[in-house]
Amino acid sequence: MKTTLSVIKADIGGYVGHSSMHPALIEIAETALSEAKNSGMIIDFSVLHCGDDLELIMTHTKGVENQEIHKLAWDTFIKGTEKAKELKLYGAGQDLLSDAFSGNVKGMGPGVAEIEFEERRSDPVIVFMADKTSPGAWNLPLYKMFGDPFNTAGLVIDPHMHDGFIFEVLDIYENTVVDFSIPEELYDMLVFIGAMEHYLIKSVRRKSDNEVAAVSSTQKLNFLAGKYVGKDDPVLIVRAQSGFPAMGEVIEPFTFPHIVAGWMRGSHHGPLMPVSFEDANPSRFDGPPRVIAAGFQIANGKLVGPRDIFKDPSFDRARDTANEMADFFRAHGPFEPHRLPLEEMEYTTLPEVKKKLEGRFKKI
Ligand code: 13P
Ligand code: 13P
Ligand code: MG
Ligand code: MG
Image: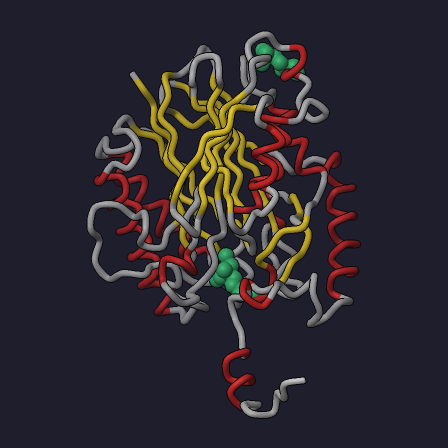
């Protein structure tokens, strides 16, 4: 029996502003998913939030991109949106771009990461969820987990992963994907994935047997909608141990709170701060960007967990560094590199200001 893990998320309304989730929405999602569990549609579920993003983590045996499962998520978001509208939560239904469900939530707004696998004797999985950033935020940590021997000792000393991994990289402008075989093509790949608002690591597979190790959500909401309606706060599923990086190797990259895009109005850079579930409420200048990690042991489809992985004093220094970096970036105010380059900002007054100043720019 193969198990499918589906993580489907959406921002259906923030409390207060874009900072967090109202408990009523969590309750609605839990009720909807318990009904689905009781009816046998899903095996198990866990509902979490990272900031204002509602995260539905579900297991079942229906495979990836299953219409029934996607409809369950969609209907749950719709129910939550009704409540969000009643409470006048901020941006109710923000990520639901279409009024009618047409079979698959991909391309409709919600973020999706799904993975189907034959369970091993023990299958530890980490689900990462981030707010106030974009799917490009996973490039650096995924590169470190699966490509950097200074992070992942197993690449050097575990015979099961010594051959390396295949990284599937998506060009979000061209809508094309390319596979890189790592380590041989490491330098080629870095040319692309260093540009993390253009090229996104979509999945990682073990080279020796093509077994899937990681899958990210790669929806870019702002592209989907043609105009800005909310960012694409991403999720990522990573399998650990026994021929994959150990759990400690999977989470190690987050000790470095690297700079990501998406803070305040989707238009600023800032550090990605790893936090516990209870601290996933980005408030200062609507940030700084947050990431949580939910660890599960998957047992015949049951989600044994979640364990709150970043609730650990060994991440305190990363949080301190992130706060220091946040001060440093904030001091730049409206200047780059805190503010995103003109073409990447999600809010801009540029066309209007340009129009107002028409004729005042003189050729020299
Ligand atoms: P496995 O190869 O059994 O996953 O062990 C690696 C490990 O956990 C060492 O930290
Ligand atoms: P969200 O994408 O998390 O809703 O944040 C929007 C924003 O612009 C916050 O400043
Ligand atoms: Mg929001
Ligand atoms: Mg959000």
